[in-house]
Length: 417
Image (cartoon, rainbow, N blue to C red; front, side, top):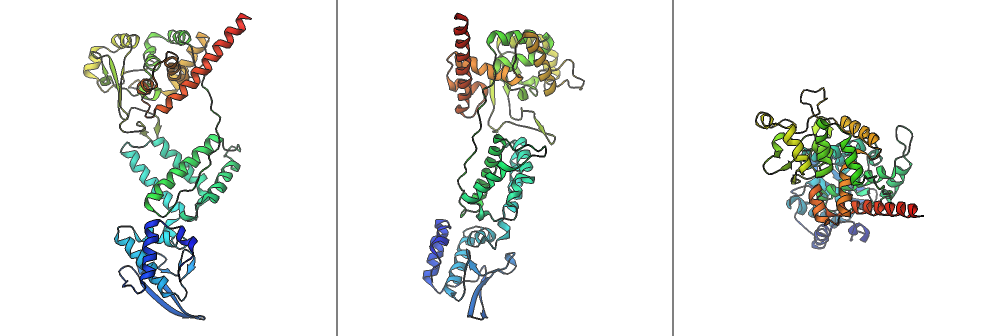
């Protein structure tokens, strides 16, 4: 008796080949992992596998829902396949999760999620992943991912993922509002990341298709070069340095807040953006770059270089190399570190004074990217300046540049009329 074709189709190719060979061979010497047992039932002899204390459920009576019944060859074939895979280095629980997911309670989604989060936390500790991302995954595990609680990993199929996506669309937040399309998309991408990790440990599992909700692309509001200059001039001289770094060097606000004095080279006129130089604090951790190798050196433009030479004296470079390069003169903390709220408050006040309107990130980094794109700077150079790991990120500035150009022409056309 050969198991049904659909049961074989759900297995990985190597395991399917081993199992089929084991069944064809018939009498096989087994017993290193488990034993074939038999008992007498109302319809005659019934065979099952006994794995003792090495497996939680202990007994296996079917192959992917197909009972062994009176088929000794099927029971022996399954046991032989299990032993082959265990000898190849796979954990017994993982093999049984593939052969009999309905019996393998160690392969439930919520159990594997806990392992995944522990693994991801280790990656965060060594600087390969972001604490912000870990915090989001933990939050979703407590809420959105609980839809999968108690279900087997092998129950995650195209159909169940579609049901999960509908559940997210109907789910209300604590404030009563539905989840935005952007949040739904993030949750689905996070769950797919978990499944990619799970597949490495359960090779027989196949990642289903994910249909992600469409998210409307918002084009940021940017400033012209003259508008940006007017905003910078509206900021006091002693506070202006950090905003010059954001506007002229493509440095992110979270990076500028934690740049050390030692990162600035007055002779080379450069600033090093190093690992761990992003500063959104999650559970007391300082966020690092998305990739440990994401380090770059940016040139300090003349206007910024001049400000640094005037406001970062030599004695600070000698005696405070680990101090903050950009200090907030009005900060109440001892180190005078810039806070995110202070950066936004001063920038917004300067925008109002200059008659401009753009958020801190849009008025600095996005504006610089748009200006560079309008000047015809190569995408690879823009990606290098901003530290983008993927050149496709620059395409966003192209959309901004197109919109900016169109708006300018429309205003000119209106004035001509």
